[in-house]
Image (cartoon, rainbow, N blue to C red; front, side, top):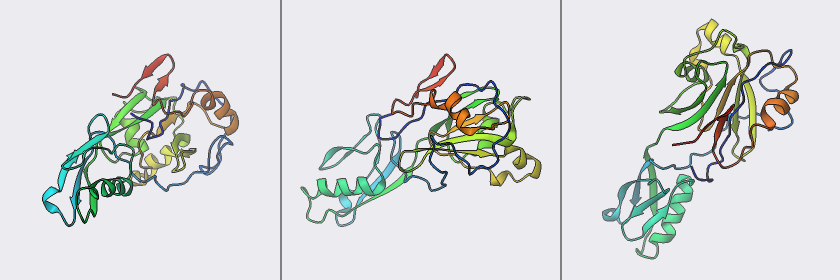
Length: 236
């Protein structure tokens, strides 16, 4: 995966921390405050889209983003699409079509989106990178890797993701409450490259938790390599 999408590395399995993280809104100094505002979608290889020229419908086309991140269109040839939003790609195409047609108004419509990857680790049966075909919550993600171990602390499952500015954010999710109340519809939906971490014991001093288990383990660079202990998972 190219560096247009800021990637995440993964977590080591936690050996143990102490007392308790009181609020999901709390965050350590290394992380930005949590926000549920999602970053605007950026195209990835495998995504399919319609490229419509409003005044030249005869050259409109449906195309798929190739593994190299580009799409191929009549008149203008190959164009970089990976990492661009709908508006950004539309603007690029308009400039290129303007060299070929008089009224180059372009409308880009996403039609089919490639699955994305997340990491889930800690006290789950089979930690690692999983491919998510569509909408998936934290609880569902845990079930997809074999469920929780008996030692899992379900009331403080850690979720890490980047905000639209590329800064990492951290919150906790009370999976225990979701299970006990039966309100699984309130599960937190995951986004591409999220990290879900199920701790063994209560998380007390969040800054200490970050220093010991995250800051040195999560370089948050563009290599998109997930490492769990000595085993490394690379995106396919």
